[in-house]
Image (cartoon, rainbow over all chains, first blue to last red):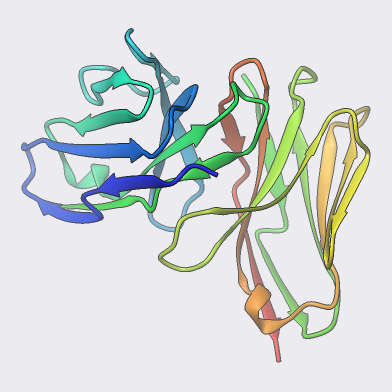
Amino acid sequence: SAVISQKPSRDICQRGTSLTIQCQVDSQVTMMFWYRQQPGQSLTLIATANQGSEATYESGFVIDKFPISRPNLTFSTLTVSNMSPEDSSIYLCSVEENGGNTEAFFGQGTRLTVV
Amino acid sequence: GENVEQHPSTLSVQEGDSAVIKCTYSDSASNYFPWYKQELGKRPQLIIDIRSNVGEKKDQRIAVTLNKTAKHFSLHITETQPEDSAVYFCAVGSSNTGKLIFGQGTTLQVKP
């Protein structure tokens, strides 16, 4: 299975600032996704990171707030912009290796606290 | 869009007993049904999955059953052990999109 490195692992940020989270995979993967897990809650899909084109966002998430880049098949970034305390969550990247025909693996997550 | 309901939200069993967690979904086009275990402070780990062309799958003490007609699937853990204590999430996906929609989670406590 793919090895996923996500960084930073945690951060404490001031409201109004932005944080960029990186996700690096040790092999080329077809699909990459970003999820949010609010404290004590389940995982919610933010968007699908598309290689070479704009990300596909789920309902309730917009590009201005969560810009995503995916310059190649092994790397993606998620930016949380103009942060507020409500953005305090764990953010996880996920990859699928074979175009949706195999299991999804998660990075270790980024624990974000906004003060 | 897809809607996934998971029950119960909490489950407490004695060591050695069985535990069952159930999920229902709404989109009949969904064809991939994984289960994840998440220990405190850690990432979700895939423990078992099933695809729509199979009704049941077993891996040692863990099994998953799928009823596509009724749109529900269940996780069965037998001979539970204290190390099975964690939060379990079901998810529903489609091989077309690759994305997963998660259930609300079940906190399983196995008492020694």
